[in-house]
Image (cartoon, rainbow, N blue to C red; front, side, top):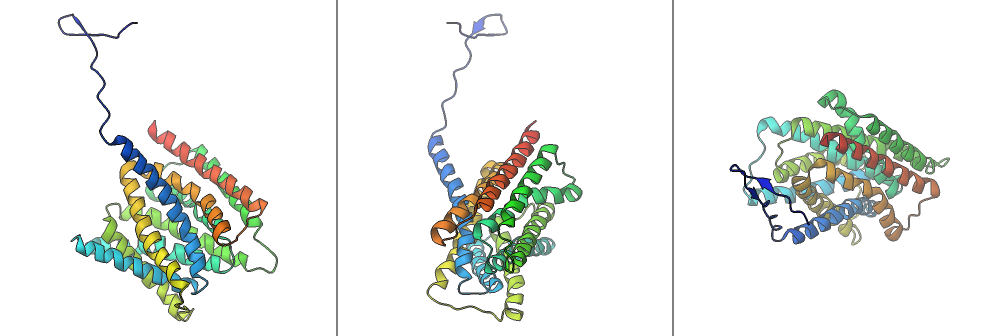
Length: 320
């Protein structure tokens, strides 16, 4: 058996240093990391279910506005207890714009779409395209490069969405309007993500998210009062859906997201969201009785493959 040796300055030979022992608690940290990843996917997917349940008792913008107001108020209280600084005047305007786009436009549009009969899994599928859409928007704004592999993944993902959407376009149905709102929500989160990266990169998670959620609450409650007449029934079945959407989806979900982003960065964490449409479709089948047809299921698989491909190509090019 040959042992590798290294030469010292006086010409003698010495054995290489022994490998350092693994840090204590590393296995436990990895275990908690897996739990956090699974929890993020499940929590994010459950947001489409809580929204669908909440829409049985409230109109879309009304439900969205109350969700944002409750979540923003809780985060604001947490930030004050922790004595975190409020955003400076120069940052405040950018946070408001990003909050209205990422939270207000996205979720209000999703709720309008689902209120018009769009299945939860299909809604999650369209919104899951936002990393690719944001990448295209970032080309002229942030001067980012998009590879041929990313373009191929984008078109593969869009093909999956077209395949899935084609099954929902029933004659005389209201799904077409709902799907249009889904793409408005996709545009909102994509523009908002690029805007956030450009102007809010140093956002403090707790106070920054509190400001964004409260801005989204105002933006959603305006049409809730003017268009919907603040249509809500505070029944026993409404409160679990609202509290889950506000505290679990908006507060716990965002906390898990920022915790994983600090540990692993954007590329690894964004890949988790490619699992959300599949998990959402499974939860919708179990809890809402929504059964997807073969075209929608095929679209889910195709779109997931496209987004995973685009994300893998992007990560590979960055590591070179």
